[in-house]
Image 1 (cartoon, rainbow, N blue to C red):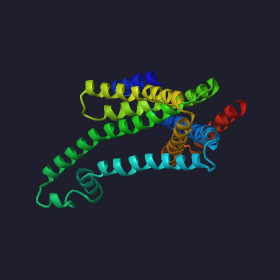
Image 2: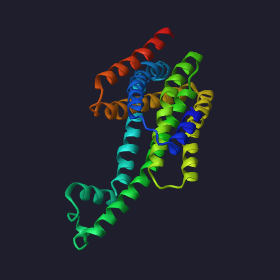
Image 3: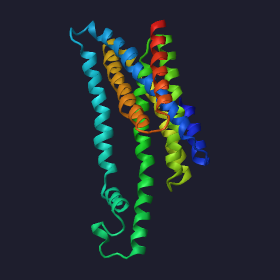
Image 4: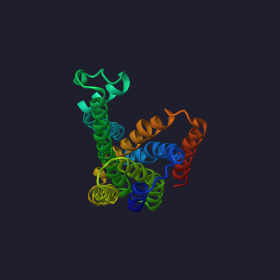
Amino acid sequence: MYFEVEQLGKIAIKSQFQNDMLISYTNAFSSGLFLAVGIVHILPEAHETLAEYIDYPIAFLIAIMGFSLILFVEKIIFRNVEENPSCVELQQLDKQGHHQAILLDNFDHQHTNQLIRSLKHNQNNLKPYLLSTAIGLHAVFEGIALGVTRRTSDTLALGLSLMGHKWAEGWALGVAFRESSVEQDLQIKFIIFSALLSPVGIIIGMLIASESIFVTGIVQSITAGTFIYIASTELIVEEFNKNQNKTIKFILYLLGIMLMSFIVYLE
């Protein structure tokens, strides 16, 4: 998982190659995998663990809390950063023309174009940092989910499903940095940092699993909610809002669900 993000991120920074369709197909397949991982694989196991301590479907409630936590961080905290005055001003300029913005009432055409380029430059520089934070947050929770698994079959099933998606995350992060004007040394450092968060999450999960079965059940519930969030609000929404090849992507989505469900059945 570490080398996928690190190597694909570095390649994307230095390469001009871009295959959006391949990434879309991977995301569609991964969305089905992640949805099934959260609902069919992790959540029932967490419920079984916590049912021994509490006579209430607490695992499902904690999963909703995990879902809500990531929703709050990404859609409220990150959104407030993205919707800074520069970005809003840029949107007004792009939609309404050169002289619609209040700040530009007294600017001539050349000054307006310079400000638009400056705002786009700042927005492109901000994007990779926000993306690396979001990917890093996911990576920690995904790593924890992998670290708390107790059976080899669970570890292999979950690990392989994550590895099938990590390369796309690394590539997307590398492309975002490539389109910015951030120095390349700093770009590579951020790629390595993002790649390290999955192993860090795994170590945290292993430490939690060695301490308490009850805490393990709670953590599994939270990670189930995060997997459901990643699948439903990011991968599925992002891919199926695009008009290209929706039928193929839906088939891949169903295949992802069927594959993880079959693995759980074999267990």
